[in-house]
Structures are given as structure tokens and as C-alpha cells.
Amino acid sequence: MKFIGNVIWIICGGLLSAIGWWLAGALWCITIIGIPVGVQCFKLSSISLNPFGKDVVDEGGAVSCLLNIIWFFVSGLELAIGNALIGILLCITIIGFPFGKQFFKIAKLAIAPFGARVVKVG
Image (cartoon, rainbow, N blue to C red; front, side, top):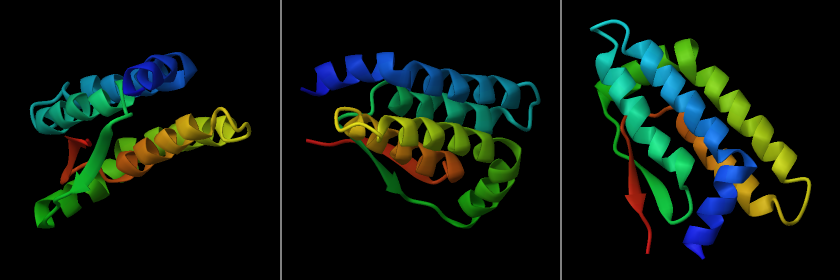
């Protein structure tokens, strides 16, 4: 079921979300200082491509908090709003509700991705 959910997910907007993460990562990698941030974006794009069967665990510290504050104003707000809007649109129907729920998970991750780790569930 996870595989089928992930295939339908990509069609219902997961690819757009992943492209957003890849674009943010590429923009961050333009500067040497931003490369660690860009690498984190590329890692987190994996949850945008196949979120079913994955969960996010928060393991943040002081440095992660500082990076999350900078991230929020530079890239996080745009990614969070985009994912939340797609999630709202999908939650209008009963069939789209599980996909909308995944978009909300990604929107929460877009607000504070540093210190977060994607883990497989089950």
C-alpha cells in the first residue's frame, strides 16, 4: 500500500513539492556558506517524493535552532505556504485527505528542517 500511495502521491503534487526542495537546495548551494543548508534540502526532498511509510523525528539543538530561524525567513516560509495550500486543496475531498495530511507533514518540516531526521516507519 505504501508503494501505491507514493505513486499516486507523485501524481497529486508530490513532484512539485520535491522540485521546490531541489530548487531551494540549488539556490542555497550557490554560496560556500550555504552548501550545508542546500545538502539538507536535498536530503529532505526524499520525503517529498515518497512520504508514506516515513516520519520526521526532531533531534534539534542550539545550532539547529539558529539555522531554522534563518531558514524560515529565507526559504522556509515559501515552501511551508506552498505545501499547506496544496494540502488544503487535497483535504476538500475524502479521497485526497491522506495526501493532504502528508502535505501538512511536509509543510511542518519546511518551517524547521534542521535537526529533523526522516526515518522509516514499520
